[in-house]
Image (cartoon, rainbow, N blue to C red; front, side, top):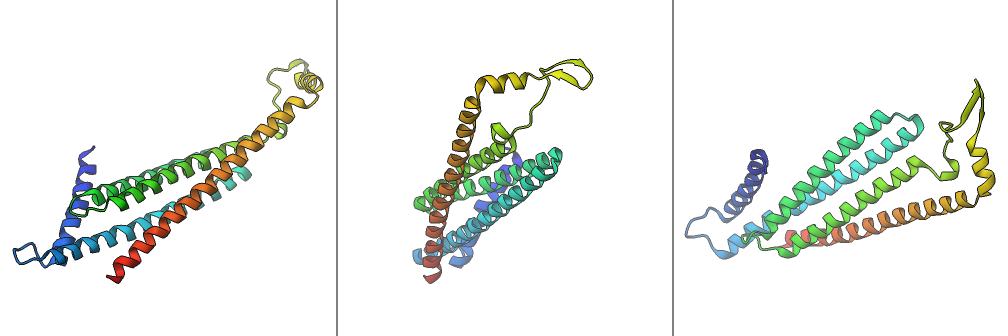
Length: 222
């Protein structure tokens, strides 16, 4: 861990302690356990609201990735697409880092909310799966169905300029389309599986976030 990362984590923990102290009216002998509990609840509320903000950042990042990929498919601007992927990767990495820090805080004895730490861990797992499958979908779409891919003539024999013996004609004739059809079916199945996986991940994440919102409502009502 770098000094900067350590300082950020210390700052988060100091913020937790500071908020609890403020809610308790100081850390003197006269502070009661109920007031301390109120301070912890207040900080828990702050962290859960921050989590929802992080999820909004993730949603925006996915929207940017989707639009950027669409532009890439139309324009073929590889450099711009790779730049976007790098920026999105950085954003997702930062979001994950912040959520992991929240997990650590919830496991802190001062807070004692292992249940919320587990909930955040489950969200992280599904987000990781969602990102992996989203990238898989884009890789597949970028390659295209085997039967629709552009042919190259690198292995063909050129006898004269603009005249060559095309190896693809021989391959297509012998295969009679069977191998191509099998490749297309394998591609379609892989794409459908990835899309279904993303949908399942999104459903799970939304369910976890609904639990988070219920927890926020309960804390606000106290």
